[in-house]
Image (cartoon, rainbow, N blue to C red; front, side, top):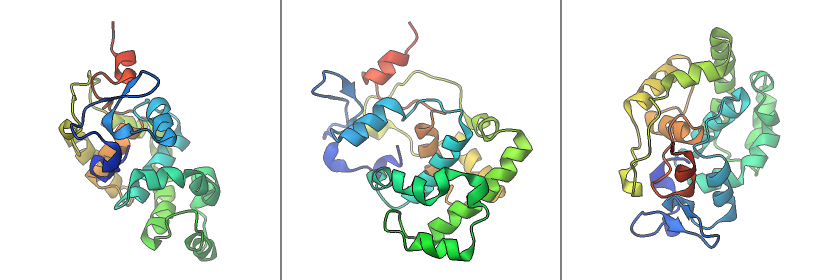
Length: 211
């Protein structure tokens, strides 16, 4: 999930507590009933990812979300994948000015020049970082805090940044990445499973709690 504060408040209960859905399962308050959100919540958000391409894609998309709702980006995800060659960083790093203009004319993505340019710059930084560490997975997971049980009952209890996201943001910026502020980094950590912020009683958390 992207920044908690950017979620569509219309789908959240006033209490910020987990919600019981029609299938009988309790889910995090931000999830709502939108099938796209429910699928994302149930199958991807908070699941530990060790796939370099997925880790790179989500870092780009979290940056694209800045100032927007995550639902906007989620609905444009397939368009982003088509526009950016499946987030193949080697191809993206070689984009020409002409290609950039084509991207800025693509109605399927957010046509923000700074964000499009950031994708290309991030591809270059990603390739350099991956080369230095062997895999991007090895690099990014060094920022993961120790595993912990979820103690979050209400959405307002979730942090928007931590010392780990501060450290990640600082290092990513040092390596040339853009749109990687600490709030974006924490949302990224939630999305790719460096932290598990499913709320208490959410069926995903109950599945993952050790017996």
